[in-house]
Structures are given as C-alpha cells and as structure tokens.
Image 1 (cartoon, rainbow, N blue to C red):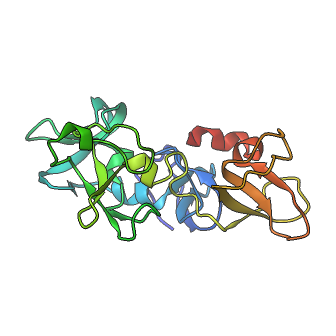
Image 2 (image 1 turned 90 degrees about the vertical axis):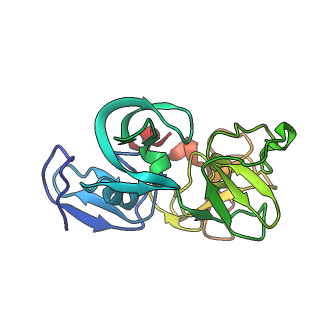
Image 3 (image 1 turned 180 degrees about the vertical axis):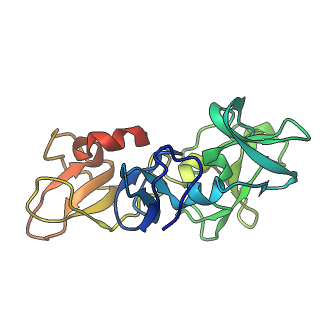
Length: 232
C-alpha cells in the first residue's frame, strides 16, 4: 500500500499484477505491476509511480537533474512531440515527456541477437543510414533510438517496443470477454486467421482461445473494454 501526491482521490493505492489496465498517467495499456486506488480504482503503472515520486531525476546522458512539471506544455527532446506534464532541466532547454523519461535503457527485439541500447542521438552523419531496420522507414537522427553497436542495427523506439502495446505481456490469460474459455494474449506475425468479431485478418495483438480444440480468435481492439481505449 502507498499514497501518491498527484492522485486526486487521495485514497491509498494497493499493488496489483496480471490485470490488464490503462495507466492514468502515461495512458499505456499494460498487465504488469501497477498500483490501484482503493477508492476510485484508478490504476497507475509502476513505472509512472517511480518516475513521479517527488525529487530530482537523472536521464540518459544528461548531466543536469530533471524536475517534473505537471501542467507545463513543452516539446520532448526524445520524440519531438508536444505534451503536457514533462520533466524539465532548470539549467538548459532539455525536456522529456513521461513516456520517454521511462523508456527502458536496454530492450530486446528479433531484429538483432543482442540487446539494443537506448541512444539519445545518431552518431552516423551519413544521411542514407538514417533508417529503421525494423520498419525500413526513415528516422530523425535527432530523436532517440535503439541501437546495437556490434551489428550496427538502429530502430525507432516505437518499433522496438511494439508501439501501442509495449508493456502488454504476450502469453498471459485475459478473461474480460463473454467467451466461455480463457483467452491468451498473442501477436500474430505470419498466419492471420479471420477475427470472429469483424471477420478481418487478425494481425498484430489478438486474443486466442487457450483451448486447442477451440479456434476462437479476435482482434484485441474488437473486444477490449471502453475504459482501455484511452491507452491508445
């Protein structure tokens, strides 16, 4: 149990796990550890609870401490988007939004056999090298990226972390539907069976029946509750 200063309800929050939720702070959907309000049942992911604990914070290769300003409206140095609620440096114009501040320093992706490291810029000055090795589209060399120095692999942060669902753990059971059997959270990469709700091919994140004899499968977006649409 714990209390957090920024939660309007001011009721204590209890630690939970293995429950699919939309974080009230970063808006990402997750089923990892989180804190749930005992009053209003609002859920905040563990990453945000740690990041928003009062006090100065350090960031990737930035020498000055950062402080969180909940109502400040600034452009993030890491992704280039403008957001409300940012970490700012009091000594220079360095700004990070909440999502970028909490990015994992190391990440794994099938595009490379090694762990990829989070980088704050691209050292390669050759413009044709500024592409993503996952989606094969161009990258902004001034935006943060994931890189493998051994293989010279570079990729967008969103491509490495599965963009809309970076913290939705695959293989977990989800029971929030009207299907009689438990459903497993999966990601379809090659074989795309038709969704039992919309009849379109199930590409990317889907829910598949855990019983092998049942062929039920649906898009995650076709069945997720309205309360989780904020996660996008």
